[in-house]
Length: 86
Image 1 (cartoon, rainbow, N blue to C red):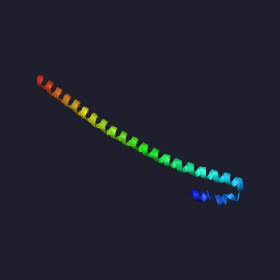
Image 2: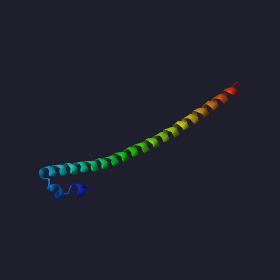
Image 3: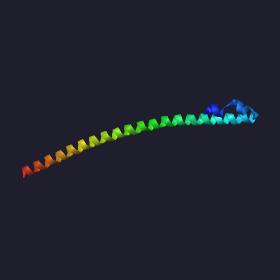
């Protein structure tokens, strides 16, 4: 793409103005390529963050489920003990 836009022979016929315009096209093309590469790395980083967050939430749910089950079991045992004491 840059080779097509940045053909010095084509822009040479326009003199200094052509050179300036060619430089702007090259700089714009470079900027767009740079932005696309940065965007890809940012998307990968965000994907990694979301994956880590998903794993943490799953672990939190497991811990919560375990704690809830232990609490329910303790309440059941306490209820049974109180019934047998009467």
